[in-house]
Image (cartoon, rainbow over all chains, first blue to last red):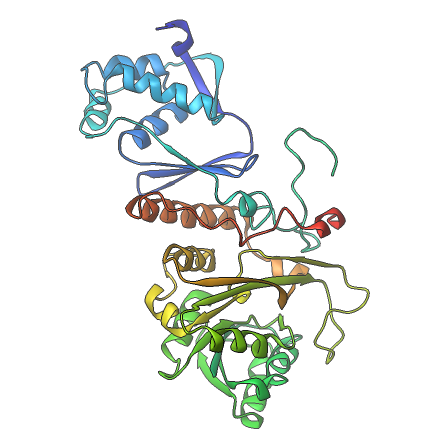
Amino acid sequence: MESNKYECVYRLANNDVASEEFDGEFVVLDLNNGRYYSMDGAAAIVWKALTDGASPKDLAAVCDEEGKCGPQAILAFCDQLESYGLVVPTPERSGIVLPDTLAQAIQLNETPPETTMYDDLAELMMADPIHEVDESEGWPVRKPEPNGAAD
Amino acid sequence: MKVAVLMAVHNDRPFIEDALQSLLRQKGDAFLDIVVVNDGSNDGTETVLRKMAQEHAEIRLIDTENQGVTRARNQGLQALAPDTELVTFLDGDDLMADGRIKRDCAAFAKDPYLAMIYSRLCYFEHSDPGTLVPSSDSRTIINRSIHLSAGMYRHSLVKDVGPFDEDFVQAEDTDFIFRIFESSPKYEVSDEVSHYYRRHPGSMSRDRTIVGREFARAVLKSAKRRKQLGGYRLPGDVFDVLRITEATNWI
């Protein structure tokens, strides 16, 4: 384990990554590439803790019982989130003290934290309806290319 | 064929007469049942609706207090006649393209298993009253996007999918279309323009934060249903928002 790597605090990778919570479950939209991710169970709890400022290392430490939601599973999920480009590490260090109840809530789940990536709505997410219109004109505005290239 | 066009209307005074006329000009192509739910209009729309309903037997007017478009649409669905064969939707500031009903009816008549035809939309800015088409100087974009009016649906499909989800503040139409596709109906996509979709500043009085969140809600609900469906993916041949050549004209 690269211990230092996991001491970081994550932030959402950029302004085009949007996270919405509904009744304890999350959907994360990446408007750059039109992909989206759903998270429930342990994944939702870990995602919320990470985006609230907990470090992967601290989360893994409180989930110290080996098993489906043990420390290795927590860190593997963090790697997955990074590889999907949803979060990036910051130099900050977490000052959050994680309660034991958080670990209990995570480890109550039968399946490890994981998310599934979907890309079949890319056509819609990258143009319509979220980027559908210029508010002043009421007219569709094409979202700029992720690399900033001109249309 | 009996074709119901469901309109949930709220304060569309400048456009409502043209919207209705865009349907009435096609009354010779089907048994047309225009179900208009007047959702508490108070800008004169209600007067136009009453007058036109008196003049045209094809228009059935249902007056309600303002309850929002989702409930209004559900009220319209409940009012559909049992012998309705096809259903589509029209907003009070839009226009149906001429020839759409005849074309769609012919396709449905040819294939009894066909449950939906999904066609292109033409976004436009303005039209000259009475012409029922975009003005020659109006910018236009043609694509197949997510929009209730892009679809002509077999009534049985609409009944199977169920009413609009009233949990939604926005994006109830997106959720409805997701559910339509997830039910794996037999469908055809059409490159024909079926619908003129008016875009104007007044059409954008929506809070964009709510729009984004409600779209996300529809996406999450769809993702949860897909788990039950064993990894269902939306078909790749329907939406062409990013592939259209007209996109080069977008500002």
